[in-house]
Image (tube, rainbow, N blue to C red):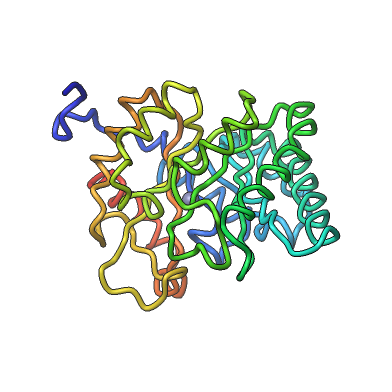
Length: 282
Ligand code: ZN
């Protein structure tokens, strides 16, 4: 066995931290940029919901004057649908996201696969492949990477028919394009018995585009919006960080937490907790 032991992982500079705007859902983009900078974060991954109230032009101006890096615009995809017009709507929507990603100088667009209740998962994955094929020429024109994010199997019925890194890689094998890769989120992948070899494979294939961190609480009020801050749950985040870094990943590490209780509190105080959790657990 090779690899860096977890206790000798180099300390992380907070400048490698990027925060997803959904983590501080109640803050507008301007306040996100200020507040993230205040805790030393070097990047911001912007959800489309954060752009909506101000529009893309204003968002671009704010980001440009902040000098924050933008690893990702979040998110497009949701490709599978029972009829052609709904499939086309998802493609058009994702193409519009690609334009926004380019305007924001984002490195990648995160794609959630989508799933339709009742549709066989294998059929869903075929439709994800077709959807990604349809947007790939535009991604290439704009030089925006496409990061497919496998979601935990609890979401297989209605949010994502891609539930493992292996399933994502199978789609990327068919696409065979250097702009396509995977976003590895600890919440969605920590349980996978194949996690270490799959992450190593992503590294060999130059397809490890993003690393998202939060935590899996044993008691959850809700599977979507009760995610833990790093250290509040059971995930061996440092162990997974070692896997991604051994696979060659040296990009920003993105904090992405959806949590109603944290959203309800003072967001500036919460960001200080995020910085502390980052230093202690990532
Ligand atoms: Zn994620």
